[in-house]
Amino acid sequence: EIVAAIEAVLVRDRPLAGRRALVTSGPTREALDPVRFISNHSSGKQGHAIAAALAALGADVTLVSGPVAVPDPQGVKVMKIESADQMLAACLDAGALDIAVCAAAVADWKAARPAAGKIKKKAGAPPPALELAPNPDILATLSKAGPKRPALVVGFAAETENVVANAIEKRGRKGCDWIVANDVSPATGTFGGERNTVHLITAAGTEDWPPLGKGDVAMRLAGRIAGHLAEAVRKQAAE
Amino acid sequence: EIVAAIEAVLVRDRPLAGRRALVTSGPTREALDPVRFISNHSSGKQGHAIAAALAALGADVTLVSGPVAVPDPQGVKVMKIESADQMLAACLDAGALDIAVCAAAVADWKAARPAAGKIKKKAGAPPPALELAPNPDILATLSKAGPKRPALVVGFAAETENVVANAIEKRGRKGCDWIVANDVSPATGTFGGERNTVHLITAAGTEDWPPLGKGDVAMRLAGRIAGHLAEAVRKQAAE
Image (cartoon, chains in turn cyan, red):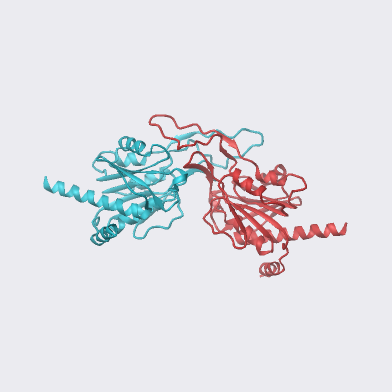
């Protein structure tokens, strides 16, 4: 009940009013040819819930989403894309931002040379060689220092092994402020499921959150974001 | 109205009562690791509509479906699978069949060695080599001559170029009785869309059907299947 009470106060007070937030969500699809693609099991449920939670706290939210079955959150500007290249372009188009939450499961690689026509299976011939190329790094791009960097950049780490260690390493490598790390091993049911067990990794250390519904993870994260930005304002005023 | 009248008579007379039909639908997903996969843009709309149409004409229908967003058709036994290997196993489990309609967009290839843990992107390292291996050929397997072969095996050909020529060649190579060929170039909007323009390729030649809703393609195909099986019974009786 304490959580629900805090949530009610946050939604009433809209602490993120006047703040601009970008959220990425869902998988990307990387075309191999006009019919085939590489993708992943991200459902978009967590990212969409975060977009909805930030909007509930008053933020002006743009959601850049890959192909998902979940409905668009209300009160959020939704931009639908397929590939990582398209997601990056949409993110860079979003303009000045206070907050960026990169919850999408962006494909690390795409086909080096997608075929213009459907790749034909030839009887007796070996399978085609599939050469991959790296996708742009959206989280690292948004995290890059500069006058246009959002005040707070939050990444996600979807891991199946050494979840926290990999996520701490990822935070340093990407240059983002926080990482939300979750275990997406099939046994956890995180991808596509309704619940999530996450670790919040910040400069201060690692917090292990209890298993929560994805909506509760989103609201808790949005509350933390609001608190962090309010604290930054207070510090600036004190200087 | 003539079409609607014929359809009403077919649904009333249930010409496929007592017949067992298998329909495959949707894409397959071929795991690269626990989170990534290769798939394709098949929505399952055409295959699911065919399962529903065969059931409407009285058939006992098993639908083996990959991951799709369309709802399960009513009055049909639905078996949900992910990979081509799982789809083949489900098809072989379906028991004795009169009719098999392979409408699924089965991946031609899978990862030769799917990774047990998520493949990690290494900074500075080249993308991983992705070695592919052929998937089982479900249509050719069901088409193989023998006492258990369904009386009628119908395949689908999803092509982006030389649609009819490729489909005629496919019919010979797979050993199926009919091929429903459609153009799935992105410009046609067939994958994921509500309409379809198909060619029916049989031993007698090629019929070009007009653009139709996927439900109408399904009902027309189901009617043709019922007619073909009734004709076969008549011929046997005359011998």
